[in-house]
Amino acid sequence: MGNTTKSEIIQSISNQNLNLSNQDVELIVNKIFAVISEQLSSGGRVEFRNFGCFDVKTRKAGMVRNPQTGEKIEVPEKLIPYFRAGKLLKERINKEK
Amino acid sequence: MIKVLTKVDVTERVYKETGMPRTIISDILSDLFEEVCVNLKQDKNVKITSFGTFKTRYKNERLGRNPKTGEEAIIEARRVVSFSANKKLKEKTARKIND
Image 1 (cartoon, chains in turn green, cyan):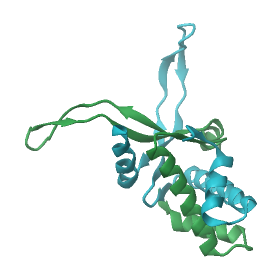
Image 2 (image 1 turned 180 degrees about the horizontal axis):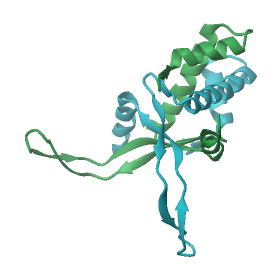
Image 3 (image 1 turned 180 degrees about the vertical axis):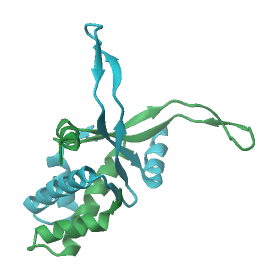
Image 4 (image 1 turned 60 degrees about the vertical axis):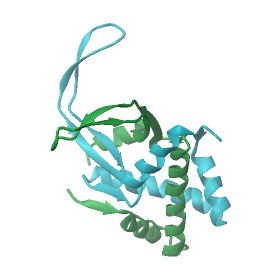
């Protein structure tokens, strides 16, 4: 099990679209993630058919404990980003290779 | 603010900021998620800097229940996709609750 990074994906997309420069692909890919981030941080969601949706959930305020010192800390309510895979993605992940 | 953005909306926003042709942006968007999917299928984690990581996890078979009928059914072992947001993205979204 290895890792694939954003730059490797950009390279691969560039190789499939020879009319585009690596820089153009990089610019667009970066903007795509910037747009998703922006939308999430303003409390909205982003849906991509067949892939999945990015959304934010509210995590309620609560008390946590520092495991090292045992000290109690209050955590305020906050929004956390999450992703739910779409039907097609779920199916494809489970299909034979 | 629009509550839900779709592929078309994201394409439009990227177009406004980059001036690249919409068809190209739309194609890259499709290619991008195709790449993520292909890599996940090959058991690879996909790491997007300052955004997050896509991973797959293996889930064992377990006994579930149909919530409608109350009938017990076996949920087969399967792989699921999980996404963990990067610290930067988490911090960005966390702050906005006070607005």
